[in-house]
Amino acid sequence: MLPTRRRAGAQPGPGRIQTRIMLAMLLSSALVAPVIILSLFYISQINHLLDRIVNVDVELIRLADDVTVTFLDARRSEKNFLLYRDTAYLAAARTGAYRVDTICTRGRAIDSDVSPLFDSISQDIGRYRRQLDTLAALLGPGANIAYPQALLRLRNEHQRLLDLAEATTDSLRRDSALAAAERLSAERELPVTGLIGRVLNEQLRATETRVTFHAAAIGTYAATRTGESRDRAQQLSVWGQRNIATVLLLVLVALVWVVVSMPRGLVLPLKRIANALGRAERGDLSARIKVRGRDELDQLARQLNRVFTRIRENDDRKTSYIQLLEQRFRLLAADIAEGVLVFDRTPNLVYANAAVESLLGRPVSEARGHALAEFPGLAFLADPVEDTLSGSSAHQECGILPGLPSSAVCIEVLRDNTGAVAGALVVITNPQPPAPEEPAESGPAS
Image (cartoon, rainbow, N blue to C red; front, side, top):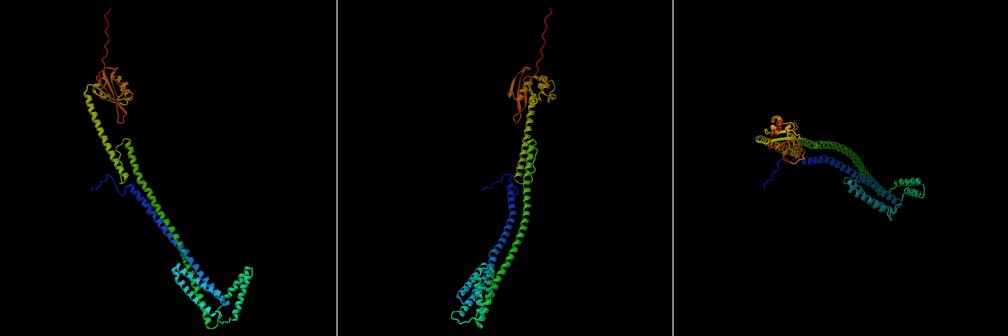
Protein backbone atom coordinates (compact mmCIF):
# COMPACT_ATOMS: atom_id res chain seq x y z
CA MET A 1 0.00 0.00 0.00
CA LEU A 2 1.49 3.31 -1.07
CA PRO A 3 1.92 5.94 1.63
CA THR A 4 -0.52 8.82 1.49
CA ARG A 5 1.06 12.04 0.33
CA ARG A 6 0.63 14.97 2.64
CA ARG A 7 -0.83 18.06 1.07
CA ALA A 8 1.72 20.74 0.43
CA GLY A 9 1.74 23.45 3.04
CA ALA A 10 -0.24 21.48 5.63
CA GLN A 11 1.13 22.05 9.06
CA PRO A 12 -0.44 19.60 11.52
CA GLY A 13 0.49 19.76 15.13
CA PRO A 14 0.04 22.09 18.08
CA GLY A 15 0.14 25.16 15.87
CA ARG A 16 -3.20 24.44 14.22
CA ILE A 17 -6.11 26.59 15.33
CA GLN A 18 -8.34 23.59 16.00
CA THR A 19 -5.63 22.00 18.11
CA ARG A 20 -5.03 25.24 19.96
CA ILE A 21 -8.74 25.61 20.70
CA MET A 22 -8.87 22.00 21.93
CA LEU A 23 -5.79 22.60 24.07
CA ALA A 24 -7.38 25.76 25.47
CA MET A 25 -10.55 23.83 26.32
CA LEU A 26 -8.52 21.04 27.90
CA LEU A 27 -6.50 23.62 29.83
CA SER A 28 -9.70 25.28 31.07
CA SER A 29 -11.05 21.89 32.10
CA ALA A 30 -7.77 21.04 33.81
CA LEU A 31 -7.93 24.35 35.69
CA VAL A 32 -11.54 23.87 36.75
CA ALA A 33 -11.00 20.21 37.70
CA PRO A 34 -8.94 21.02 40.87
CA VAL A 35 -11.73 23.28 42.11
CA ILE A 36 -14.30 20.54 41.59
CA ILE A 37 -12.05 17.91 43.15
CA LEU A 38 -11.26 20.09 46.17
CA SER A 39 -14.93 20.98 46.59
CA LEU A 40 -15.99 17.35 46.39
CA PHE A 41 -13.22 16.32 48.79
CA TYR A 42 -14.13 18.86 51.46
CA ILE A 43 -17.85 18.26 51.00
CA SER A 44 -17.35 14.49 51.33
CA GLN A 45 -15.22 14.94 54.45
CA ILE A 46 -17.72 17.29 56.06
CA ASN A 47 -20.62 15.02 55.07
CA HIS A 48 -18.77 12.06 56.58
CA LEU A 49 -18.26 13.92 59.85
CA LEU A 50 -21.87 15.12 59.95
CA ASP A 51 -23.10 11.64 59.12
CA ARG A 52 -21.03 10.19 61.96
CA ILE A 53 -22.32 12.85 64.35
CA VAL A 54 -25.97 12.32 63.42
CA ASN A 55 -26.09 8.58 62.80
CA VAL A 56 -23.42 7.33 65.22
CA ASP A 57 -22.46 9.70 68.01
CA VAL A 58 -25.91 11.15 68.69
CA GLU A 59 -27.37 7.65 68.50
CA LEU A 60 -24.74 6.37 70.94
CA ILE A 61 -25.61 9.16 73.38
CA ARG A 62 -29.28 8.25 73.09
CA LEU A 63 -28.54 4.52 73.57
CA ALA A 64 -26.37 5.27 76.61
CA ASP A 65 -29.22 7.27 78.13
CA ASP A 66 -31.65 4.47 77.26
CA VAL A 67 -29.38 1.93 78.97
CA THR A 68 -29.23 4.02 82.13
CA VAL A 69 -32.95 4.83 82.23
CA THR A 70 -34.06 1.29 81.35
CA PHE A 71 -31.76 -0.34 83.89
CA LEU A 72 -32.82 2.08 86.63
CA ASP A 73 -36.47 1.30 85.78
CA ALA A 74 -35.62 -2.39 86.11
CA ARG A 75 -34.07 -1.76 89.51
CA ARG A 76 -37.10 0.26 90.52
CA SER A 77 -39.33 -2.68 89.64
CA GLU A 78 -36.93 -4.96 91.54
CA LYS A 79 -37.23 -2.77 94.64
CA ASN A 80 -40.99 -2.66 94.33
CA PHE A 81 -40.85 -6.45 94.32
CA LEU A 82 -38.87 -6.22 97.58
CA LEU A 83 -41.57 -4.07 99.13
CA TYR A 84 -44.69 -5.80 97.88
CA ARG A 85 -43.42 -9.27 96.81
CA ASP A 86 -45.55 -8.96 93.66
CA THR A 87 -44.11 -11.10 90.84
CA ALA A 88 -45.37 -8.55 88.28
CA TYR A 89 -42.61 -6.22 89.46
CA LEU A 90 -40.08 -9.02 89.10
CA ALA A 91 -41.26 -9.68 85.53
CA ALA A 92 -40.96 -5.95 84.76
CA ALA A 93 -37.37 -6.01 86.07
CA ARG A 94 -36.53 -8.97 83.84
CA THR A 95 -38.13 -7.22 80.83
CA GLY A 96 -36.03 -4.13 81.53
CA ALA A 97 -32.89 -6.29 81.64
CA TYR A 98 -33.82 -7.82 78.29
CA ARG A 99 -34.35 -4.36 76.79
CA VAL A 100 -30.92 -3.27 78.02
CA ASP A 101 -29.38 -6.32 76.37
CA THR A 102 -31.20 -5.46 73.12
CA ILE A 103 -29.89 -1.87 73.29
CA CYS A 104 -26.33 -3.20 73.71
CA THR A 105 -26.72 -5.40 70.63
CA ARG A 106 -27.79 -2.38 68.59
CA GLY A 107 -24.96 -0.26 69.98
CA ARG A 108 -22.34 -2.84 68.97
CA ALA A 109 -23.74 -2.78 65.42
CA ILE A 110 -23.53 1.01 65.22
CA ASP A 111 -19.91 1.50 66.30
CA SER A 112 -17.34 -1.21 66.87
CA ASP A 113 -15.13 1.19 68.87
CA VAL A 114 -17.50 1.04 71.85
CA SER A 115 -18.28 -2.68 71.51
CA PRO A 116 -16.16 -3.54 74.61
CA LEU A 117 -18.26 -1.19 76.73
CA PHE A 118 -21.52 -2.66 75.45
CA ASP A 119 -20.08 -6.14 75.99
CA SER A 120 -19.35 -5.21 79.60
CA ILE A 121 -22.90 -3.95 80.04
CA SER A 122 -24.26 -7.19 78.53
CA GLN A 123 -22.14 -9.21 80.94
CA ASP A 124 -23.45 -7.12 83.83
CA ILE A 125 -27.02 -7.64 82.61
CA GLY A 126 -26.36 -11.39 82.57
CA ARG A 127 -25.23 -11.19 86.21
CA TYR A 128 -28.28 -9.05 86.99
CA ARG A 129 -30.59 -11.74 85.57
CA ARG A 130 -28.96 -14.33 87.75
CA GLN A 131 -29.28 -11.99 90.73
CA LEU A 132 -32.98 -11.59 89.95
CA ASP A 133 -33.33 -15.37 89.88
CA THR A 134 -31.63 -15.57 93.26
CA LEU A 135 -33.89 -12.82 94.56
CA ALA A 136 -36.99 -14.65 93.30
CA ALA A 137 -35.84 -17.83 95.02
CA LEU A 138 -35.21 -16.05 98.32
CA LEU A 139 -38.49 -14.12 98.30
CA GLY A 140 -40.66 -16.75 96.69
CA PRO A 141 -44.09 -17.82 98.03
CA GLY A 142 -42.59 -20.58 100.17
CA ALA A 143 -39.94 -18.39 101.74
CA ASN A 144 -40.38 -17.57 105.44
CA ILE A 145 -38.86 -14.10 105.59
CA ALA A 146 -40.01 -11.66 108.19
CA TYR A 147 -39.74 -8.05 107.01
CA PRO A 148 -37.91 -5.81 109.44
CA GLN A 149 -40.03 -3.16 111.09
CA ALA A 150 -38.02 -0.40 109.37
CA LEU A 151 -38.72 -1.89 105.96
CA LEU A 152 -42.41 -2.21 106.81
CA ARG A 153 -42.52 1.45 107.81
CA LEU A 154 -40.67 2.32 104.63
CA ARG A 155 -43.19 0.36 102.56
CA ASN A 156 -46.11 2.02 104.30
CA GLU A 157 -44.62 5.48 103.82
CA HIS A 158 -43.89 4.71 100.17
CA GLN A 159 -47.45 3.53 99.60
CA ARG A 160 -48.82 6.61 101.36
CA LEU A 161 -46.81 8.91 99.07
CA LEU A 162 -48.01 7.03 95.99
CA ASP A 163 -51.63 7.28 97.17
CA LEU A 164 -51.16 10.98 97.86
CA ALA A 165 -49.76 11.58 94.38
CA GLU A 166 -52.64 9.69 92.82
CA ALA A 167 -55.32 11.47 94.85
CA THR A 168 -54.11 15.07 94.59
CA THR A 169 -55.03 17.39 91.72
CA ASP A 170 -52.23 19.84 92.43
CA SER A 171 -49.34 19.13 90.07
CA LEU A 172 -46.76 20.58 92.45
CA ARG A 173 -47.93 18.36 95.35
CA ARG A 174 -48.07 15.31 93.03
CA ASP A 175 -44.51 15.89 91.77
CA SER A 176 -43.29 16.45 95.33
CA ALA A 177 -44.93 13.20 96.52
CA LEU A 178 -43.46 11.20 93.63
CA ALA A 179 -39.98 12.67 94.30
CA ALA A 180 -40.25 11.70 97.97
CA ALA A 181 -41.36 8.19 96.98
CA GLU A 182 -38.36 7.95 94.63
CA ARG A 183 -35.99 8.90 97.41
CA LEU A 184 -37.51 6.23 99.65
CA SER A 185 -37.14 3.66 96.87
CA ALA A 186 -33.40 4.26 96.81
CA GLU A 187 -33.16 3.11 100.43
CA ARG A 188 -34.77 -0.28 99.80
CA GLU A 189 -32.64 -3.37 100.13
CA LEU A 190 -33.19 -7.10 100.38
CA PRO A 191 -35.03 -7.81 103.64
CA VAL A 192 -32.79 -10.76 104.35
CA THR A 193 -30.45 -10.70 107.26
CA GLY A 194 -27.22 -12.53 107.39
CA LEU A 195 -24.39 -13.10 104.93
CA ILE A 196 -26.59 -14.01 101.94
CA GLY A 197 -28.62 -10.80 102.15
CA ARG A 198 -25.57 -8.59 102.52
CA VAL A 199 -23.71 -10.25 99.63
CA LEU A 200 -26.70 -10.11 97.29
CA ASN A 201 -27.35 -6.49 98.15
CA GLU A 202 -23.70 -5.63 97.50
CA GLN A 203 -23.80 -7.47 94.16
CA LEU A 204 -26.94 -5.62 93.08
CA ARG A 205 -25.40 -2.25 93.99
CA ALA A 206 -22.13 -3.18 92.21
CA THR A 207 -24.04 -4.24 89.09
CA GLU A 208 -25.93 -0.95 89.06
CA THR A 209 -22.69 0.99 89.52
CA ARG A 210 -20.94 -0.83 86.64
CA VAL A 211 -23.89 -0.51 84.24
CA THR A 212 -24.35 3.20 84.90
CA PHE A 213 -20.57 3.76 84.74
CA HIS A 214 -20.22 2.01 81.38
CA ALA A 215 -23.29 3.79 80.00
CA ALA A 216 -21.86 7.13 81.15
CA ALA A 217 -18.52 6.21 79.52
CA ILE A 218 -20.31 5.51 76.23
CA GLY A 219 -22.14 8.85 76.43
CA THR A 220 -18.93 10.72 77.32
CA TYR A 221 -17.05 9.07 74.47
CA ALA A 222 -19.80 9.91 71.97
CA ALA A 223 -20.10 13.49 73.26
CA THR A 224 -16.32 14.01 73.07
CA ARG A 225 -16.16 12.64 69.54
CA THR A 226 -19.14 14.78 68.57
CA GLY A 227 -17.25 17.88 69.68
CA GLU A 228 -14.13 16.75 67.84
CA SER A 229 -16.12 16.04 64.69
CA ARG A 230 -17.83 19.41 64.90
CA ASP A 231 -14.49 21.19 65.31
CA ARG A 232 -13.02 19.16 62.44
CA ALA A 233 -15.98 20.01 60.21
CA GLN A 234 -15.57 23.70 60.99
CA GLN A 235 -11.83 23.46 60.29
CA LEU A 236 -12.48 21.68 56.98
CA SER A 237 -15.02 24.32 56.05
CA VAL A 238 -12.48 27.10 56.68
CA TRP A 239 -9.74 25.24 54.80
CA GLY A 240 -12.10 24.46 51.96
CA GLN A 241 -13.17 28.07 51.55
CA ARG A 242 -9.57 29.27 51.67
CA ASN A 243 -8.19 26.67 49.26
CA ILE A 244 -11.10 26.89 46.84
CA ALA A 245 -10.82 30.69 46.80
CA THR A 246 -7.07 30.39 46.08
CA VAL A 247 -7.61 27.88 43.29
CA LEU A 248 -10.44 29.97 41.84
CA LEU A 249 -8.11 32.98 41.78
CA LEU A 250 -5.48 30.97 39.94
CA VAL A 251 -8.11 29.63 37.54
CA LEU A 252 -9.35 33.17 36.92
CA VAL A 253 -5.82 34.36 36.12
CA ALA A 254 -5.25 31.41 33.78
CA LEU A 255 -8.60 31.92 32.05
CA VAL A 256 -7.84 35.63 31.57
CA TRP A 257 -4.52 34.63 29.99
CA VAL A 258 -6.30 32.15 27.70
CA VAL A 259 -8.98 34.70 26.75
CA VAL A 260 -6.34 37.35 26.03
CA SER A 261 -3.84 35.15 24.21
CA MET A 262 -6.29 33.23 22.01
CA PRO A 263 -7.89 36.27 20.30
CA ARG A 264 -4.47 37.86 19.97
CA GLY A 265 -3.21 34.79 18.14
CA LEU A 266 -6.22 34.99 15.79
CA VAL A 267 -6.97 38.70 15.40
CA LEU A 268 -3.45 39.94 14.65
CA PRO A 269 -2.88 37.50 11.76
CA LEU A 270 -6.31 38.39 10.38
CA LYS A 271 -5.43 42.10 10.55
CA ARG A 272 -2.18 41.48 8.70
CA ILE A 273 -4.03 39.50 6.02
CA ALA A 274 -6.74 42.19 5.71
CA ASN A 275 -4.14 44.96 5.38
CA ALA A 276 -2.28 43.07 2.66
CA LEU A 277 -5.52 42.40 0.76
CA GLY A 278 -6.42 46.09 1.03
CA ARG A 279 -3.09 47.10 -0.48
CA ALA A 280 -3.54 44.55 -3.27
CA GLU A 281 -7.04 45.87 -3.91
CA ARG A 282 -5.58 49.35 -4.36
CA GLY A 283 -3.14 47.95 -6.93
CA ASP A 284 -0.07 47.49 -4.73
CA LEU A 285 0.89 43.94 -5.61
CA SER A 286 4.18 44.25 -3.70
CA ALA A 287 2.27 43.67 -0.43
CA ARG A 288 3.59 40.79 1.63
CA ILE A 289 2.24 39.22 4.84
CA LYS A 290 4.57 38.41 7.70
CA VAL A 291 4.34 34.75 8.70
CA ARG A 292 5.31 33.79 12.25
CA GLY A 293 3.59 30.49 13.00
CA ARG A 294 2.28 27.27 11.57
CA ASP A 295 -1.48 27.43 12.01
CA GLU A 296 -4.17 27.77 9.35
CA LEU A 297 -3.96 31.57 9.28
CA ASP A 298 -0.22 31.44 8.71
CA GLN A 299 -0.80 28.85 5.98
CA LEU A 300 -3.35 31.21 4.42
CA ALA A 301 -0.81 34.04 4.63
CA ARG A 302 1.77 31.90 2.81
CA GLN A 303 -0.75 31.06 0.10
CA LEU A 304 -1.70 34.73 -0.29
CA ASN A 305 1.97 35.66 -0.57
CA ARG A 306 2.32 33.08 -3.35
CA VAL A 307 -0.83 34.44 -5.02
CA PHE A 308 0.53 37.98 -4.84
CA THR A 309 3.79 36.78 -6.35
CA ARG A 310 1.98 34.97 -9.16
CA ILE A 311 -0.23 37.98 -9.87
CA ARG A 312 2.81 40.26 -9.87
CA GLU A 313 4.63 37.91 -12.23
CA ASN A 314 1.61 37.67 -14.52
CA ASP A 315 1.23 41.44 -14.43
CA ASP A 316 4.89 41.85 -15.32
CA ARG A 317 4.52 39.38 -18.17
CA LYS A 318 1.43 41.14 -19.44
CA THR A 319 3.15 44.48 -19.21
CA SER A 320 6.13 43.13 -21.10
CA TYR A 321 3.83 41.58 -23.68
CA ILE A 322 1.87 44.80 -24.07
CA GLN A 323 5.10 46.74 -24.41
CA LEU A 324 6.27 44.27 -27.03
CA LEU A 325 2.96 44.59 -28.89
CA GLU A 326 3.13 48.34 -28.64
CA GLN A 327 6.67 48.27 -29.99
CA ARG A 328 5.65 46.05 -32.86
CA PHE A 329 2.62 48.23 -33.47
CA ARG A 330 4.80 51.30 -33.59
CA LEU A 331 7.23 49.64 -36.00
CA LEU A 332 4.41 48.42 -38.16
CA ALA A 333 2.59 51.74 -38.08
CA ALA A 334 5.80 53.58 -38.94
CA ASP A 335 6.31 51.53 -42.10
CA ILE A 336 2.83 51.80 -43.56
CA ALA A 337 1.48 54.63 -45.69
CA GLU A 338 -1.81 54.88 -43.82
CA GLY A 339 -2.03 57.33 -41.04
CA VAL A 340 -2.51 55.90 -37.57
CA LEU A 341 -3.77 57.92 -34.59
CA VAL A 342 -4.50 56.70 -31.06
CA PHE A 343 -6.50 58.86 -28.63
CA ASP A 344 -7.16 58.20 -24.93
CA ARG A 345 -10.41 58.77 -23.06
CA THR A 346 -9.76 62.55 -22.75
CA PRO A 347 -9.23 62.63 -25.79
CA ASN A 348 -5.53 63.36 -25.98
CA LEU A 349 -3.24 62.13 -28.69
CA VAL A 350 -1.33 59.11 -27.43
CA TYR A 351 0.32 57.93 -30.65
CA ALA A 352 0.65 59.05 -34.25
CA ASN A 353 2.86 57.80 -37.04
CA ALA A 354 4.80 59.91 -39.45
CA ALA A 355 2.17 59.59 -42.17
CA VAL A 356 -0.16 62.03 -40.37
CA GLU A 357 2.33 64.82 -39.75
CA SER A 358 0.80 66.78 -42.59
CA LEU A 359 -2.56 66.66 -40.80
CA LEU A 360 -1.03 67.47 -37.42
CA GLY A 361 0.87 70.46 -38.69
CA ARG A 362 3.78 69.63 -36.36
CA PRO A 363 6.24 66.78 -35.76
CA VAL A 364 4.80 63.66 -34.21
CA SER A 365 7.13 63.82 -31.24
CA GLU A 366 5.75 67.24 -30.37
CA ALA A 367 2.13 66.33 -30.97
CA ARG A 368 1.83 63.47 -28.49
CA GLY A 369 0.02 64.35 -25.29
CA HIS A 370 -1.95 67.25 -26.77
CA ALA A 371 -5.72 67.37 -27.00
CA LEU A 372 -7.53 66.64 -30.24
CA ALA A 373 -8.95 70.16 -30.30
CA GLU A 374 -5.42 71.60 -30.58
CA PHE A 375 -5.00 70.20 -34.09
CA PRO A 376 -6.96 72.21 -36.71
CA GLY A 377 -6.11 69.64 -39.37
CA LEU A 378 -7.97 66.97 -37.37
CA ALA A 379 -11.11 68.96 -36.79
CA PHE A 380 -13.06 66.55 -38.96
CA LEU A 381 -12.32 63.78 -36.35
CA ALA A 382 -13.73 65.64 -33.33
CA ASP A 383 -17.33 64.49 -33.57
CA PRO A 384 -16.67 60.87 -34.70
CA VAL A 385 -14.06 60.34 -31.97
CA GLU A 386 -16.34 61.85 -29.32
CA ASP A 387 -19.15 59.53 -30.41
CA THR A 388 -16.84 56.54 -30.29
CA LEU A 389 -15.50 57.38 -26.81
CA SER A 390 -18.99 57.98 -25.46
CA GLY A 391 -20.08 54.57 -26.74
CA SER A 392 -22.90 55.93 -28.87
CA SER A 393 -21.35 54.61 -32.09
CA ALA A 394 -20.60 51.06 -33.13
CA HIS A 395 -17.44 49.13 -32.26
CA GLN A 396 -15.86 50.10 -35.56
CA GLU A 397 -16.92 52.59 -38.17
CA CYS A 398 -15.38 53.31 -41.57
CA GLY A 399 -16.37 55.95 -44.06
CA ILE A 400 -15.55 59.11 -45.99
CA LEU A 401 -15.59 62.15 -43.73
CA PRO A 402 -16.54 65.57 -45.12
CA GLY A 403 -13.34 67.13 -43.92
CA LEU A 404 -11.22 64.62 -45.82
CA PRO A 405 -13.17 63.59 -48.91
CA SER A 406 -10.24 61.92 -50.58
CA SER A 407 -9.53 59.45 -47.79
CA ALA A 408 -11.29 56.59 -46.04
CA VAL A 409 -11.31 56.88 -42.25
CA CYS A 410 -11.83 53.94 -39.87
CA ILE A 411 -12.44 54.57 -36.15
CA GLU A 412 -12.37 51.65 -33.68
CA VAL A 413 -13.07 51.79 -29.94
CA LEU A 414 -10.36 50.56 -27.52
CA ARG A 415 -11.39 48.92 -24.25
CA ASP A 416 -9.47 47.90 -21.13
CA ASN A 417 -9.57 44.50 -19.43
CA THR A 418 -12.80 45.40 -17.63
CA GLY A 419 -14.57 46.23 -20.90
CA ALA A 420 -14.69 49.99 -20.31
CA VAL A 421 -13.89 52.40 -23.16
CA ALA A 422 -10.24 53.40 -22.87
CA GLY A 423 -9.62 55.22 -26.17
CA ALA A 424 -10.03 55.23 -29.92
CA LEU A 425 -7.89 54.05 -32.87
CA VAL A 426 -8.11 56.03 -36.10
CA VAL A 427 -6.73 54.77 -39.42
CA ILE A 428 -6.68 57.12 -42.46
CA THR A 429 -5.97 55.60 -45.86
CA ASN A 430 -4.75 58.81 -47.53
CA PRO A 431 -3.57 61.04 -44.75
CA GLN A 432 -3.03 64.08 -46.94
CA PRO A 433 -4.94 67.27 -46.43
CA PRO A 434 -7.08 68.28 -49.43
CA ALA A 435 -5.42 70.65 -51.91
CA PRO A 436 -6.63 74.21 -51.66
CA GLU A 437 -9.09 75.20 -54.40
CA GLU A 438 -7.65 77.48 -57.11
CA PRO A 439 -9.56 80.74 -57.64
CA ALA A 440 -11.59 80.93 -60.92
CA GLU A 441 -9.98 82.91 -63.85
CA SER A 442 -11.77 86.11 -64.94
CA GLY A 443 -12.91 86.60 -68.66
CA PRO A 444 -11.38 89.08 -71.20
CA ALA A 445 -12.20 92.64 -70.67
CA SER A 446 -14.79 94.01 -72.97
